[in-house]
Image (cartoon, rainbow, N blue to C red; front, side, top):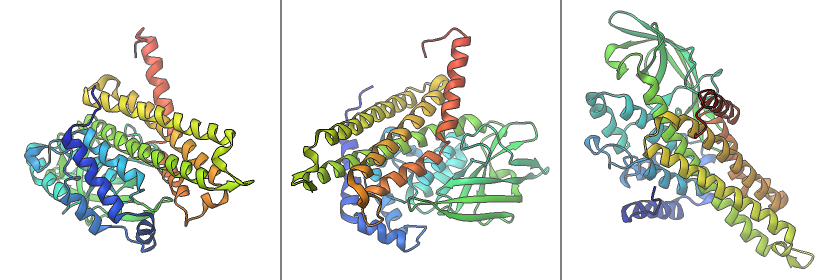
Length: 383
C-alpha cells in the first residue's frame, strides 16, 4: 500500500495544521476547557466548513468520498494540538456506523446533516461489563408490535455530551445485535455528561423503556454487528492516528526543552543517558506509526477475516507506546511537566483517556490471544 500523500490529502492535512496554529494554541485550549464548554460550537462549524466532517462520507450523501486515510490524516494533526472537540466520537464513530448499517433512505436522511455539522450523532455501544468491546450486551430491545422498547445502560459514550442523537446497540429477542437511532430528548432516555481527565467530554446513558417506532431501526434487525465492527475499526485507526500525532509533538517539545534547559552549566541534552531515553521514545513512536499503517492497510484492503485482530493489536500497542513516550516526556521535563500550565503533561492525560476508549488494552490483548489460539488450532499460522 502506498502511504505517500497525494495533493488533495496534503491540502487536507495542511488545512488542519493552519487551523491549530491559528486558533488552537495551548492557551486557547486551556481557556476552552476552563469555560466548561461541552460544545466547542465555533470550532465545530470550522470543522464542517473545511470539509473535515465530510471527509470519509460517501459523495452521494454530502460527503467528499474519502476513506479512513483522510480521517487519520486529520486526527494526526488534531492530536498534536490536543483538540478536545469530539471528532472521533461524532464525525467518525456515529457517522461511519450509519454509513455502514443504514439503508439508502436512512443515509440520505441522516448523513448530509452530519457532514454539514448541523447534527451530531454519537455511537452508544459500550457497557460497564464489556470494557468497550461490542459483542456482549445487556441492553435489550423488546418488540412491541409496532416498534421497540429499549432498556439498558451505556457508558463512556464518546462525543455523547455533544450529541443530539445516538446510535444505540441492543440485543433483540432472537439474540441478534441490532442498531437504533435514538434522539437525545427521547422520553425514557437520561444522559449524564462526563468530564474526562484530558479536558474532553463523554456521556453515560440510561434507557428506561425508551419506546421507538420501527423507523428508528438502523438497517436490518439482528444484523448490526458487522457494521459496528467496521465503524469501530475506522474509529480505532482515527484514535491511534491522534495518539501518533500527540507522540510526535511530545518528542519535539522534549527535544527542544533538553536543548535549552541547563544543569551544571551545560544543556540537559548533552548528557548521553538522556539522549538514549529520547531515542527510546522515538523508537516507540516509529513502532506505533508502523502498526497504524498496518491497520490502515487492513481496513483499506477489506481484510475482514483478520481486521478485528489487527484492530486489537494496534490499539493495545499504540496506547502503550503513547503512555511510555508521554510519560518519559514528563520525566525529562522534571517537576514542571506535571503542572497544568505546561503542555507536556496533557499528552499523557490524553493517552490515559484513549486507553479507556474503544476497549481497554487488557481486553484487546485477550482478543489477540483468542485469535492466535484459534489460528494455531486450525493450523493457520500465517496470520
